[in-house]
Structure formats: structure tokens, C-alpha cells
Image (cartoon, rainbow, N blue to C red; front, side, top):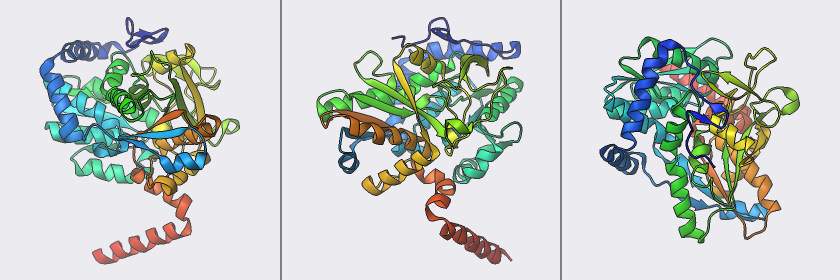
Length: 413
């Protein structure tokens, strides 16, 4: 299979459909990345920070209790939620921050949905001594307040995007617009394996540490590769980070999209099972949820990080080639899988990762006990408190918020 883009494309997907004003920035970035990815000093510094700052390698964990409850294949977790800032996003953000500093940039900008990429970029900027501005849809800011607070505590400016659907798609647009005005001193830390070249290659490369570690850990733990690798898919960074190590192996690769309220509702973010169409949006060609005129359709997911209308071009190519199979999990199924895993293993996954868990729970009973499933738990669930608590705690949660508000307000009067 194609591991890297060929002339900026994965098959017919990818490319760089950018306005002329952005050509200097992309030319500079492409040359810098081609240089530094081969630079021994750069790789040595990155490897050292992966160990001392990110906390790599992240563990491989056998979910013994969940396996028993599913009565089928053995389920293993690659626990990216234990990386610094609570998700896989720091792998890419730190790599791009180091690259930006070597390019002489003084400022980082980023888009974020669930807030994990914004938080990772804020941390990487603080570590690298760079300024940081994060663009986030107004709706996502409301449902991811813990991450917004943490980003600001780290010194980042968090800017609410109030246009369009006020979610991730619009945050990407805002970041690109800002970059076009400040290319000289600014680097755009795109958070997923999508967008115009070289971002799909670059983000996949920085995230490929997930798959490389998983491969070694699986061989050490089981003496074999997994039969199945499962990852949730928004844009595709955690999925490509995991899948990239197994493209040429006899390992089934499954990407799980956000089924939202179900396919009949039109409230979902399912691109790869008949709902999406090929198109060129946000400067690259891939599958997008769009109408007959090419305008992006509204999306929905209980998980802010999967609430995106497009998908990375390498994943679109791998789907067309039959190498990656795509499924979906609804909001309800993700919540059920999250609760089941929490009660079985004492692990609260991010809502994004809970979609992958939902597929694992569905699939495991259909496989033999000798089979092995690896699930990328790409983030931890504390960031989702304001989304999940109303579902699981109901009136008790609302009562707590009211009491806490009155306590804090009373203390300031």
C-alpha cells in the first residue's frame, strides 16, 4: 500500500488547492519538513521529549474484564489517553512546534474541536517559548470548558468562532484565514491528517509512533500481531497513527465514524458509507458531507472531535482500495460503550474513543477467543464531563452545578 503521498496525492485524493497568498507559507513548510524529518538532531530532540515530556511509550493494556463480558476475542487497549495533555494530539503538536521553532517562527495557531489538539498545541507552545492562539467553534467551547480553561491557563488565546455551524469545520476556516495574514511569524499546527499537502503526511508521520509502539508491544505481549485494529475517525490522526504500522500486514483495519442520532436523522458525521461525496474543500480532495451544490452539510456528534464534514485523504484512498473498512457508532452506542468500559476496567475513555470501543464490543463476540483486537483509546474522558455527566447523573448533576454556582457567586459578594 502507499505509505506516503505520491506527488501530493494518495490515489486521486489529497493535493494542495490553496489560494495564491498561501503559496509562500506552504512552500516554506514543505521544504522545512523534508529537511528536518531526515535531520538526526531534530529526531533526537523529538525522541527525548517523547520520553521525558509526553511520557512515551504509552502502555498496551489487556482489557481482561471487558473481554470476559464480551465472550469472544481478546481486547487490548493502546492507552494514548495517558500521554501528556490526555490524548494522542500531543504527538503531532509537539513535533510541529519543534519544526516551527527551527523555522524561526514566533507564534503557533491551531484549530480544535474537542479541545485536545488545542490543549496539546498550547502545551507545546508553552514548552517551546512560543505564542499561541487557538480557534474553536462557539458550540465546542461551551461543551469543552475544561479544555478551554486549561488552554488559557497555559497562556494560549482561545478565540470563539461564531460563523457557520460554530464547530470544527468553521474553526479550520478561521485558522487558515488568520495564517494568511501572519505567515512570516506564524505556523499553523493543523491537528489532523488532512488538509493540503504536506499536512496529511506530516501529521501521520508524527502520529505513527502509536502504531510503531503498538506493533512492538503486541509482539512482546502475545507473540503476534493483532487480528484487528480499531480507531475512531474524525479527520483521521489517531487512526492513521495506528494503522500506518500495519498497512502491509494481514491485519484488519476498522475506522469508526460518528453515527450521531442515526443515518435516518441527517444528524451524524458519516462520510464513508454512502453519505459522503468526493469533493475539494478546505484546500484538499477527499470525501465530504455536502449538498448538490458542493456546500458542506451540517454535522452532529456527541463527541466534538468527530463532528467534522470531511475525512483525511489517505483514509479516503485506503477505503477505496478496500484496505480500511469503515463502520459507525451512534451517540447512544458510544455512551453505552463508555459506561461498560468504565465499570469493567475502571477506565473512562474520551467520547471519541468510545466510538471505537462500541465497535470492539460489537465485533468481539463474533470472533474466536484466540483472536486479538487492538483499540486505540486516543484520549481520556475527563474533558467530556459537561457532556457525559448530564446523561449519567441527570438531575443530580444539574443540582450540583446550581449549588456550586450559588456558592461561588456568594463568596464573591
